[in-house]
Length: 245
Image 1 (cartoon, rainbow, N blue to C red):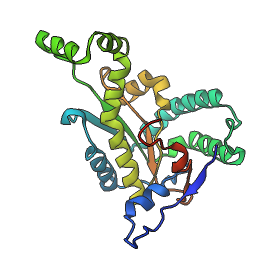
Image 2 (image 1 turned 90 degrees about the vertical axis):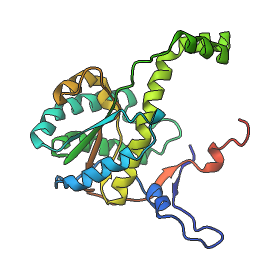
Image 3 (image 1 turned 60 degrees about the vertical axis):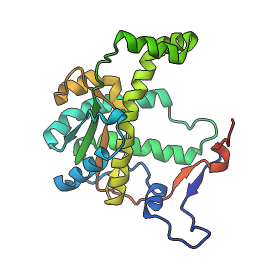
């Protein structure tokens, strides 16, 4: 896989590049965190950034659990370890074909460091969302089927679970990205994970999250031990398909 360190280029017309581009281009997943606490005011700013994200139908049915109590973090640490160990067991110690072995090794080492020091994590954000039960009148069902046609309606019936999961995710993950960008702008380290879903029931029980509430990520936040730097991503010309595939 052809990856490269990406840094924003100066616009050809000499215009000033928005600071947001520099933030995105240097927003590595930072897993090595200092144990110093993060002020509640800064954490509130991260949640505010998340709330500014789009919400399907503007329903805004998201909730955010923010953990800062060291005792609670220590309780979560064994769950985190189990999830990370399960993840590493599936990915292995060696880079997938096409990935740089050294870079992959550094990533695994950072994941293991975070696993072994999770109890020292200053803050953890758990984004949650509860999609409302669908309420469609008989007339609405008829118009829905007419609009899609019988074949597509049947297909939707087969993928409804996936569609619902993506619908919920689309109401949550843009806000999570806002949170990550805000963290980068404030000099905080953060990274998004979904490994907790392997033991979601245990996490929800530990945090008192209602059974009917879905969780979508576990985002450790703190002051970085290392430095922000350019991300390594595939170049645009390798991934873009203009007008057609």
